[in-house]
Amino acid sequence: MKTRLRRYTALVLLFTCVATALLWWQALHSQALLREQVLLQAEQRSRHLADAMAGQMEGVFASVDLALQDLRNEWQRPGERRQFGTLVREKLAALPGGMVAYASVVNAQGYVVFNSLGLESGTFVGDRPHFQKQQAGGDQLVVGVPVQSRLTGDWLTVMSRPILRNGRFDGIVHLLLSSAFLAEKLAALTLTDQDVVALVHPSGAFMARSRDNAEAMGRKVPADRPFLTAPDLKNGIFKTPGLVDDTRRTYGWQRVPGTGAVLAVGLAEDSVLAPLAPGFRRSLIVTATLSALLLAGGGLIAALMWRLMKGQVALARSEARLRHAQSMAAVGSWDFDMRTGQLEWSDELYRLFELDKASFQPSYDQFLERVHPDDRELLDQHYRRSLSENLPFDVVFRLVLPGGRIRHVRQVGMAQYEDGRPVRSVGTVQDVTDVRTAQVALQHLNEQLESRVGERTAELQQLNRELEAFTYSVSHDLRTPLRSIHGFAHLLEEEEGERLSPSGRQFVQRIQDGSRRMGQLITDLLARIFHRSRATNEYGIALVCPKIQVSNLDQRAGNAEAKLYRRN
Image (cartoon, rainbow, N blue to C red; front, side, top):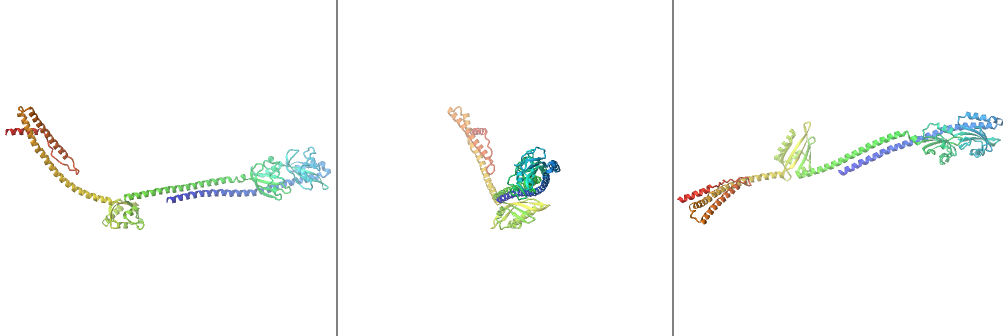
């Protein structure tokens, strides 16, 4: 039982730990799935936003390209060059404010021959990539790599169209698109303070960035970006930390038609997942609470099982001690349920009745059959009276054991009541055979003792009478000659004292002293006999002897006896 309870306790603790682990795994797994789902939605959202913003950038580039074509046409009219500056100002005014920083015209040798800022011409830009690309031939819109203007110091993106004369390259018309304007345009997209929108040149250089634009200009994105590694792709999604602020984002990108530029919208994972944080916290709190309740419940169950195990161990020890005590005291117990008729016996009770527990089913009738026929009615009367009057009963009776042997037992019991009716009866049966045997032996011994006491009493009474006779003999037969000796010695001293020699008087005196000492010895002897006769013998019978009184009367009686003898 102890090993089984330990195993069950270990299983409860193991189940509690596994259930808690599964609960946490389910909670974290659900959060991970929800996080993945939200990030997937963010990917699609960033892609849609990139497509929308690419369309806006396409409109910006288209409006700039229309202005470039108009300015190129006006420049190619020789008679209209005097009015070219006015036409440039009108075109720039027609465009959104701040979109174009200024316009310029470069001749075929790469020198600026016109700029709308009114600055002195002659600046050489023939070394710029966009010029060299236009110089290579063709009539196309070229979007140059953002550069820092030598005239204003601002970061500008050069958009140009070639000037052709008779099909030959004769210069280019520039409109310098402001990076700051583009950044404001990108920042118009309502996002969180961690999200970013970037316009990237086909070479990988930043053209504008909605956040930290100044820090981004002049830098290039890594060459492993998918829009750089696969120039034929028009859109896509990738995840990477930001180049400027190292914030991890999900980027959706779209190429701007006609320019090759890439519009990328980066949604920060923290901002995307931020709405989930309260729900995640609540979920973790609920999971922690359930885990605590589960652990507390499992711990409580384990503690209860441990206490149960200790209780059962203690109960087993107590039952073992009880069985041992019952075995030592030869006391068995019984419990009779009157509602079911079930009678339960302790192991010691089976031993007292010398019955096999495995083959014998106890019952009240079976119990009465093993009671001595002369004692059954008495026992049944005591038992039924106890039930009817709610009184304990205590009765001694005999059992008939196998082989006809007799065993004396004492049964003590009482009933338990519910609603005034007896429902249960409990009691004990004790082997009192040895006590009964001892009682019979003691009774027989007492009878023998009384007989012996009577005999001894008679003997002592006879001894007492003999002692009385002895003391009387001592008192009279020994004292009579002693009185005579003393009396005649005294008479001799009185009448013949003058004629006696000193030696004779000394002899007479010694006779008198000896008789007195002899009288004293007789007195002491009688007194000792008397005191011993007053002692109580082993049977509690006192010996009585008359007390002997010894006095000077004996001496005077001896003197008188001597004088009477002389007269006669």
